Image 1: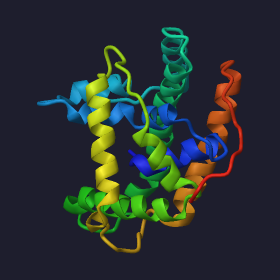
Image 2: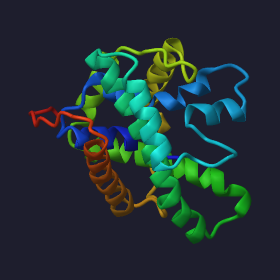
Image 3: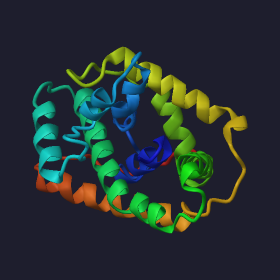
Image 4: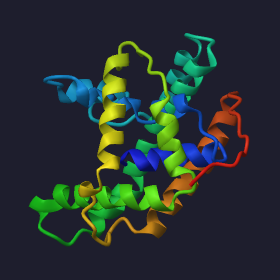
Length: 220
């Protein structure tokens, strides 16, 4: 699955560099399950609507997105939910495309494939933080966000804890491995972000969702 900065980059481009704090928070909320003690694989799957180890298809994502949107009319809630399901869709597309290609092209020791993935994704986080327009401003906005409990998926406390953990990780330059990614190059990742953004714009429109796209100036 892609790490937070990929989700943030999609959020930034979806909103023409003007993502709401709650959309940004929603875009990492499914992974807040990692804050739960003794979490099971099944519980992790629930937050991503996984069934029998298979990620949800677009129709399942649509159905649940519209269902959760109808729970609350507040704009902050709607932004949070749209971010949440943008994350689910991005995970699906990443798994179907970028990750499949990584597994196909990987030439190292099979026992070290997870270590290689994590190292390159760590580098990618810092590369995107530097290269994606508005990334630092988005992190600042994320700090101002308000979490929600999304039953039975994640709790407000779990989402807040995960947000603070990820922000702290990105602010620690010691976490950057300082390598040149072999499998997750700038070109590969930028293409994924651009394509996924376009697909989400189309999906939201087809689902009857009005997603505000207002371009504003943001600090880099």
